Length: 69
Image (cartoon, rainbow, N blue to C red):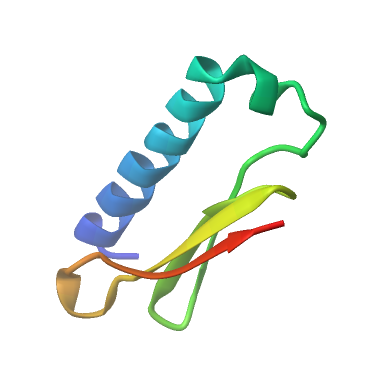
């Protein structure tokens, strides 16, 4: 994994973790732990309630998909 891709994943997961602490009702709703995965030039961050996929090809992070359950 390149340094830029790793930095993007760290920043994105930090934002998701910070959101969980700032919104305790969502964090305590039993939606499971936040998972970060990388596959085919994209990074997905989410849990059972919500996930966000970013296209990270070319060294630029672009929002690709948002899933809300």
